[in-house]
Length: 212
Image 1 (tube, rainbow, N blue to C red):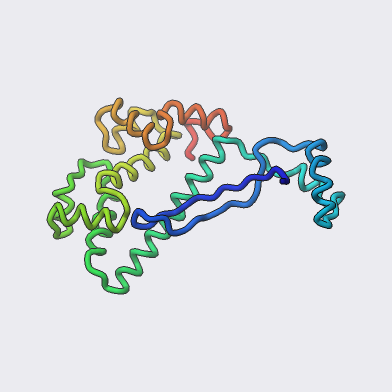
Image 2 (cartoon, helix red, strand yellow):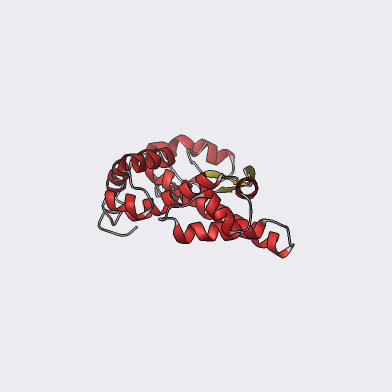
């Protein structure tokens, strides 16, 4: 065991795990000469030249816990969106029914996430009944319509927190109640908006006045 770590992020499509993405290896604590000496016998048993590996081992990048969570979350969101776009395009290419309505609904949410969004109104906009739309949306995205709207709002809220006051962020992403916004944010990210900002500062990733 060389003491390295890696991040593996599962990715689901339609609510079912389909893929996984992995990072390169890293350490969570700075390695010193004593750590290298501890693995020297293992390197020798593998026929590796320890003297050539020592410097690289000691210079291996350290990633702290908060940074790891951010990396894992970013990779998961990015790959999820890429895969969803791919599957949507494939569905359209193959002429599968229903997908166009879901894509139109998602596009509308992305453009109007700060507005009051009612399921029945969106269903009517894409030409479906409320029940059919809800079932189809959940089937294609793996999320209920409300959960999807919340996810979009929370993503925009997190991005805006580093450059806008919390109350202004709350209102700008469609919430009128600061307490409800705070509760929703914590449920989504595991920390209140204030706690999230403090962790960003502590990790040296920026301050509220600097765009992320």
